[in-house]
Image (cartoon, rainbow, N blue to C red; front, top):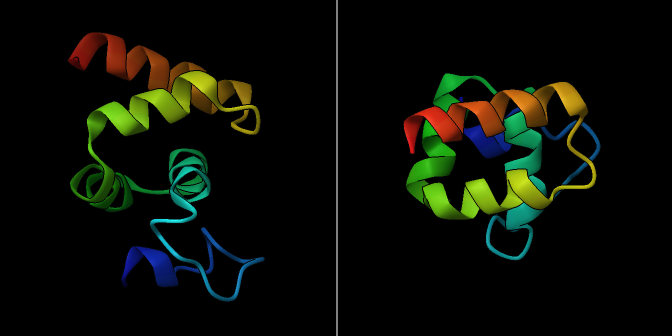
Length: 76
């Protein structure tokens, strides 16, 4: 299933523009996505954009933020 069509990620959104709403899309993928969604986001937005969202997000839960910050520290 295409990442932007997944109800598990975007249950409360009807139409989403992946460019205009990049921060929102990345936050949802980091919080609720799977490996394929993460790979899609890297291909679409790039690692630096994802790292920036992770570092500055005010809506990403503490557990997800901690996981991704550690991931990027080890794999960057």
